Image (tube, rainbow, N blue to C red; front, side):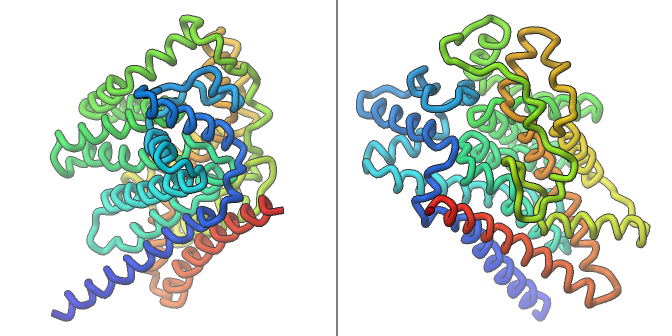
Length: 407
């Protein structure tokens, strides 16, 4: 009876923490000033085109060249699939601010739900509540994710961040043999296709990692789910192939450029709460988690095991290719197809976002490990510090965005 009461009390506390987390990441939605993000003109043009399409009875899966002219052209391969909702809301209400708020509310709450699912499967032990919550906390308050959501207003990346946890949830289920295999495969295929309809760049990264994992890990069903996801995303795949290999869509004005100068410098990875050149760091909360993991490894001699090691290796890989010194210029010299494909990235910084996504798993495990330390003061203080740092930096980042745009 006592154990059940303690469990119920723990669930209530966890629910309160998730509510606070949701409020923190939705803080900028109360202000209309965040609608002046860098990619906002293209988002607005797409939503207005979709509203006109709803009125005339047409659905535009991909935007027209006139609509894309409102942006810089790098999102020309990304579809309108996840803008149908704001397009319908704008068609009905005619209020762009309301449309934006509803869109961000749905996307942020969808991301929170997907992150909870993913980390509950990653840390499947009954006594892993700390790891689960810290993983969701680090993912949701990641400075890069907040940056692309509000400061950059990158509609494609923010939607991709919503589908990736769901895709990982399904893939981890396939690898671990948890849940029904058919459900995991169908969910993985749908989530990968959803990622593709949001962002072609994230689709290629997720599909590429899945293929490598399936081949080296000898997991046939991972390959099947990736192939099925590509099949569902066939319109986007054909559009990409036509542009890269068949010289199609020349009228879209997609820029061809070197992306190396826009990559990260090594020191920028460790930025705590302020950043320059649109390069947010890992944040103070994740930095504390990384230091805790290093301390556990070198002082306590605890090894990184299982999926934590895989996610750590992936985070290192993505971090390396996000550096400004990574030879993207050499890759682009492989041919015109390579020049076009690499230029679609726009900036290597996108891979730092993927690195932060992967890093949230081992860092959450590090906090859980420190919370079990025999020194009870340390065990209690570090998780509180991480939670306070993540929430405060998130609110600070959002607040500075509102204040800066209000001037």
